Amino acid sequence: MGKTIIISNRLPVQLQISNGKINAVPSVGGLATGMKSVHSGGESLWIGWSGLTDEETPHELDQNIDDALKEHGCAKVSLNAQEVEGFYFGFSNRTIWPLFHYFMEYSEFELDFWNTYKAVNQKFADAIIEKSNDDDTIWVHDYQLMLVPQMVREKRPKTSIGFFLHIPFPSYEIFRTLPWRREVLEGLLGSDLIGFHTYDYERHFLSSVRRILGLEVSFNDIFMDNRVIKVDSFPMGIDYRKFKNAALDHDKNQKSDLQERLDSHKASAPDTKLILSIDRLDYSKGIAKRINAFEYFLNKYPEYKEKVRLIILAVPSRSNVPQYQLLKREVDELVGRINGEISTVNWTPIWYFYRSLGFESLIDLYTTSDIAWLTPLRDGMNLVAKEYIATRTDKTGVLILSEMAGSAYEMNEALLINPNNFEQQADTLKRAINMPEEEQMARNTFLQNRLERYNVEVWANEFMKALKQKSSVVRNTFVA
Ligand code: ADP
Ligand code: F6P
Image (cartoon, rainbow, N blue to C red; front, side, top):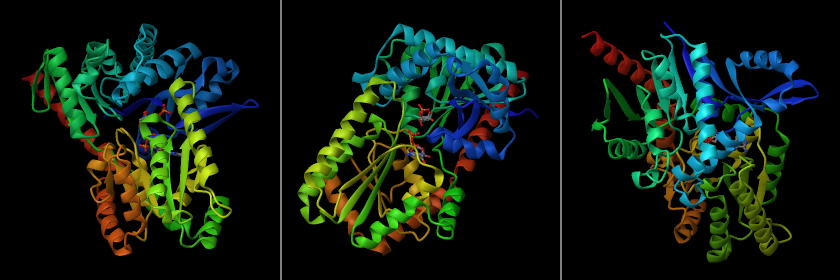
């Protein structure tokens, strides 16, 4: 039996070099945090970019880098600065990311970006071909690598190839504006199985395949030449036990500095509710709108001044992309203005942290906050919503979640909001602040049961099971 090869742009660890020493730090983001649990449990090889460009990598450390990655079951694809610029910051994050999140006006259609994207996808495909055999199963992840399945298929026609998209697939009307729409679809169709987080993304994809490529589609099967490609939705779960156990241990362990600070805040203002938001600093997450909505809430219900505090934890992300730099400035200014205008001697309405935090600190924040308020304008899934619920071991806590997040489809017991509707958000915040504990517990019981049942392991197993079934069906057809 062959092995499983996971392939994604970002590996579960990012390498940093300081004073000639290599340091591996955990990656942030749904793909890395979710797949890490799957990878650590099984016999798989994970191929991806180390996070360092060739120019940042001293030649003499090459072997040490390979060894450091090997310890984590990983192998690297090397990229130079120009490739990272065109492929990662360029086509992936200035063309596809905004387009697939319905920010059409941010999407740049640059031929140079596209050419570099193709060349780098070929590099990833070559790495797979070099490191795999025919009987291995290849699982390609996300929008950075949409051409890889077809590139691998050309060299390995019999290998099982699965692809999972971690971001939304937009409606045909949006997707068709992409100059390279045919090539992207054909790249994906090198797979045997293509997975999405939700049925809607799946539907949008099938509609694009039908209308752009003119292929026959029946239910969720696509017929292409002598192949049948299966498309399905697999909503990604989290490592539920890991978050639940961390929250249970949290009370037994020595308190962190952050927890001390949170506790002292709670002790000095026992009636104040802590409202938490955690995201990468990304315009798709609706951070600036959320801050505006918070100000709106405080104006509409001034009786909550000094009674609530919004904690915004934003992790730096894609900071070479101009839109992210603009957003950083916008959020800094908004937080500064609102805190400057409405703070009192005893109260700062917004605590804003712009940094990545360790796992323990995330748990401190999840377990201490009364409300999690997540307002993406568009989000493939949003695992933070699931992580917050998993850590609420006493079942209290209120989740306010945007309808535009993929996770909202499975989290009906959360308070679902439209992030563009400030009136509704102000009223929902009020409702969350005043929600009786019995209601919080009833809602969270349903949510937790579902998250525990459909955890990340089940998600990965279901995808792999469907891929194996699919491959055996195709092989049997050939034999007949
Ligand atoms: P995305 O994949 O778009 O970043 P998700 O909500 O699906 O969004 O996943 C984000 C992941 O990154 C979660 O697992 C979360 O715990 C982690 N994360 C988010 N913000 C931080 C932070 N400031 N520090 C450390 N980890 C973070
Ligand atoms: O979940 C979508 C995603 O793009 C993942 O592919 C990625 O792990 C995460 O967001 C973080 O983005 P990046 O890899 O660009 O830091």
